Length: 121
Image (tube, rainbow, N blue to C red):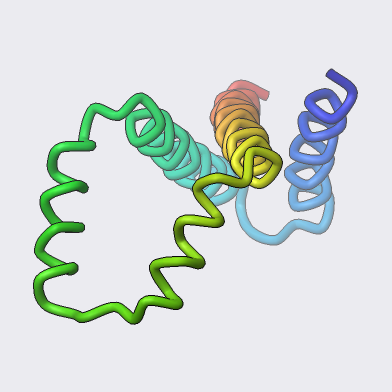
């Protein structure tokens, strides 16, 4: 929870610093904040969709096509098997992807709220 609040504060302070340094007009900063927020939310939603497995049939199809086109050595197959069996590494990947997804949602929402706040004030 601390890192989420820290991320919110860092995002807000970054936009406040941009306003204070007068890096553009208020409308330009509001447009930039909204665009960045929208891109971050789209990125977060894309990561969430990939995590749920909604597109897994398409991804598996491309994986099969790639296996047919490019030959893999036995050592590479063994390395992939070892990675799949390593539970600590799989837990690390899952935790990291969750944090990145949450971070993009938080920063995107804050940027959009800041853009609305810039236009109101």
